[in-house]
Every structure is written in structure tokens, then in C-alpha cells.
Length: 165
Image (cartoon, rainbow, N blue to C red; front, side, top):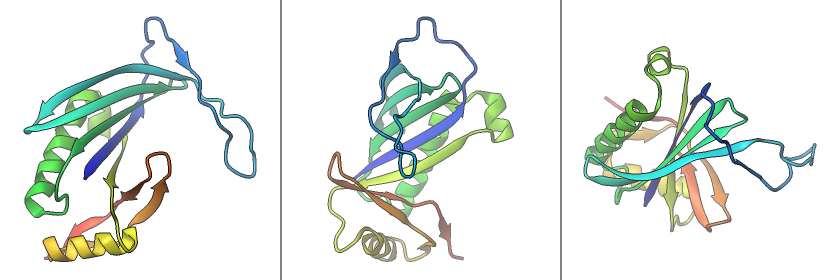
């Protein structure tokens, strides 16, 4: 399984020679207008964090927001020891990419997305089964799921895992 960790924060710096990329497609209903976002690629890199290979793609949207997409593999992401490893990786990524002032003030957003190849019978039931079997002291309060058809994978956003003690 793969973790996709997204970080978004204000980006006020100007890239040296921005090469804008085009985004094709239409906005969702009811507008159905072309997407009009300026996108500038800021770079890609792969690094080793806590023994995991982490690939990172950085992009700037509309000259205002920087988006960092980091991906790394975890065999059993609901295992308590690996939950701590994931948090360490996410903290290291925050330290590396988010400016100190934004980290201190909390002026950033983060999303953790679990990319799963096989989630049977449904992604929600799969998450409940995995968390109950591996971590009986963890509870998933809500799991928002959606299907990424481009890669035919289930993407499950688990926004609220809490420890029951």
C-alpha cells in the first residue's frame, strides 16, 4: 500500500523563469467551464526518511499556493508501530518544506490519503476490518472514500483516527 501525503501552504516567492503548465478538463457542475489555474512545477526529488524512500513533487498554483505531494509505501499502515513511523515521516516533510512561520502559526493544510490496490468488499468496510484486526485500540470515526479511475485504485482519506483509551 502507498501513502500519499499532501501539504498546501502560501507561497509568496517568485520562481525564476516560470514555465506554466496547462490543466485540461472542465470544472464540476454546475459551471462546466475550462479549468483556469496557473500551475508551475517546482521540482521532483526522492529522499530517504526514517528508512523509507519518499518521492516528492512540488507545484505552485496560481502563484499563491505551494502544494507538496509525497508518496511512500507502508505494508500495514494501521499497525500501531507504523502509525508512529508515518507521523515521523510527515513531521520530517513538514520541517523540510513548510516555512517555519507557517508551521508555528498553523497556516497550512495537510491530507493523508491511503492508496490501496485491493479493497474488498468496499473501502469503508476494508478500513474497518484492517483497523479492528491490527489495532483494536484505534477507531476510524469517519472515512471519506472515492475512486481514482485514472489508476484504478481506491483512495481512502482517513481524516479522523483517534486512540481509544
